[in-house]
Length: 463
Image (tube, rainbow, N blue to C red; front, side, top):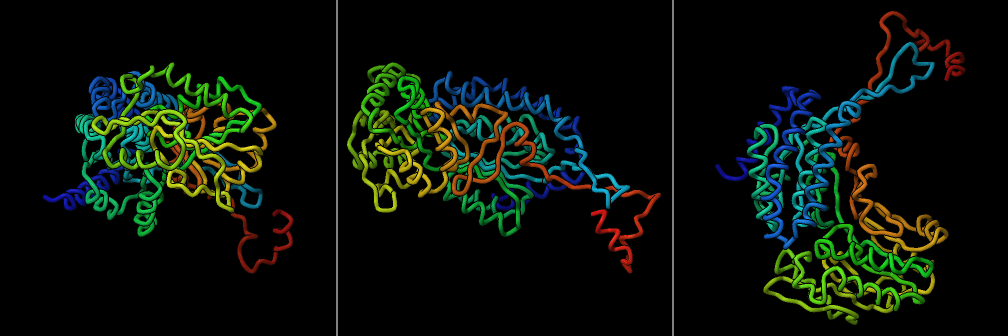
């Protein structure tokens, strides 16, 4: 059986299973979440090994950014699913009395989840928790670039779930095309904006609802009135996690000219404090995922002045954390003209742009596609101005990345950085149809609603 026929059968069989209504039982969902937790714990060591092979991701970073996030998400859903799934009463206006109104949450049905390679376990299993919690069936498609992790996840899924309920399909573009040609009830995609457009176009043919978790150029702004030491340390940490291959990594740095030199000096200090004099020898610093990505990143190094870093090793796909000075060069509409400022970097290169007026920063950001994240280091007055004059999927003030770690905050983009939110209850809601229900009485009827409408004036008063 070829791949397309196999995918056709998988979707058909999952739809048949979903129509049995078994997945709608809260007890069934809880059982599946607990099974998922057990298999994650069981395969932790294999996941650590696979993430090291794919990305040179050390066990400590893998625990913090992959394993623990998924386990916390599972625990949160196990704890709260009964409450989230409970019908929610809402008010009924007097002119509809004696009726009752409420909202129920029903699963969309058969969902497709497509995950990227940069956090291959986290970004596959976190949305999967939402699919299970809401009562959906799911077809999972991991990235072929993180093959070792994909293979471990395949074993986990095959061992834990019936294929008619949850299954994983591996492959390259031909498999993506075959999957997107199917009629799913919901699609959850994490990846690049370009591929996001392809996914959205495919979804539009069947009017399939979807969540797109994309990326973009997330700005990091350092104003003159901030704690420079904290800013330097937190920016370096946020940019060097996974060697900058993070959708919410600070993509470019805009720093006030009065504190630029001090900030950069501090950043260099913390890079070497975290990773030593030779980052390449540090077990904590990841590698670039592929030769194609490596070559793209290296090409950016010629587009500015290397303030720090710039060392590369093609054999290891290693690129040193690099500060790339761009000065203040912009076009008339506030756009940087270099390639490094035209697309998401997704690597350990941080362009540095200095400014002298915070209003120019807001204009610069708002003249670009809306970012997934925005980081601001400054005082309360500057914070209010930035929040008022910019937009982004999420914001971290006086820190980086950490807003993603708070499960009580919705995570997602806006505009070209994505649509829809997830994490915790938002994940449950993402895979659920919010169904409106009005129940009228069988004992009393509101006669004024019927023709010939001779009680219209009385109806107007009630409304």
